[in-house]
Length: 378
Image (cartoon, rainbow, N blue to C red):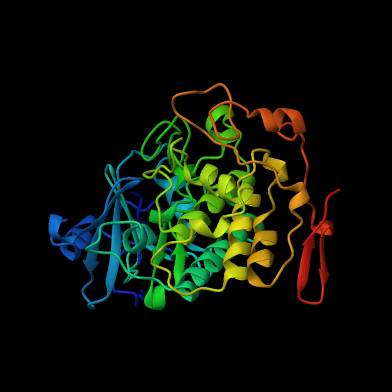
C-alpha cells in the first residue's frame, strides 16, 4: 500500500540540512534527519500510518505541534543530491486542491525522506476497502466528490502541471482523504526518482495489479491513457465498495472491470453498486459506471482524456455507447493476450475488430447541448 500523506502545515524554524548542495535554489524545506527522527518518536512503529509502495510513512509532530506525514523512501534514488533536490523542488511547486502537498525533504547520507501534509482521514483504501475496524460508510455524495476530485487532480497533472506528469500508480491507497473526505492524490512525480525495477513495482513496470492498463503491463507503453485506465478501475471500486485486486465475481471468477462489462451486457449495471449504499441517484450512478467502462477500454486511444472524464462526471451527459468496446484485462498467468472476459482476446472483439483500432475520442467529439454532452463516433 503506497501512502503519501496528509492536513495543514506551518513552517517550523529548521535550519537547512548541511547536505543540501550549494547553489541549489529550492522552495522546499530541507529537514535534518535528527529533526524528523524526533518528530516521529525515532520512527516508532506506533506512529506508522502506511507502508509499501515507495516506502514507509509515519505520523510526525513538529516542534510547533504541526502534524505531518513523514515518508522514508525504501529505494535508493538513481540521482545524486543535486538532481534529487531539483526534482523534489519541481514536485513541491505543483499545487492543486486535489494533490497532496509536499512540504519538505531530508537528504542525508543514504536517507531520502519526504515530508507531506497530514491527511486526517487516511486513504480511500483504508476507509472504503480496508478492514471493518477502519471502514467508514461513505454515502453517494461523498463518493461522487471523491471521484470528481480525483479526476480533477489527475487532469491537472496530465494537462496543466509543468512538466506534465503521468502518475503511473493511481489506486485507492494513493487517494488520501482530508476533512470532509476531500480527496487528494499522493505519490505523483516520484516514479522519476527511482530505477524502474525497484520499490512499488508489482510487475516489471511501475503500478499495481488490478489497476494496470494492458498495453502498459504487457508492452511497457506508458502514456496518460494508462492513468485513465487505472482511474476507471478506481471509479468501479468506489461505486462497488470492492477491491479490484482482491475480489473476484461469479462462477467465472471475473475481475471487477469484466464483471461490470458482463452486468452491462445483461442489463443489470446497477447490480455492481455497493450494498451499503441505501440511497443513490440511479441515473448519475449509471453514468459514472459507464464513464468507468469508457476509461478501461482495451484500446488506449479509445479512452477519453482526463479532462473529458471531468466533464462527463461533472454534469448530466448522454454517452454514445455505440463506440464503447470491451475492457482490456491484464492477467499474471498469461502475458500473450488481453481483453474480454479472459486473458486472451475475446471472440467478440475479434469479430468487431475493435481491439486494434486507434479510435481517438477528440475534444471535437464532445458536443454540448445545454446540460447534455454526447460522445459521438468518428
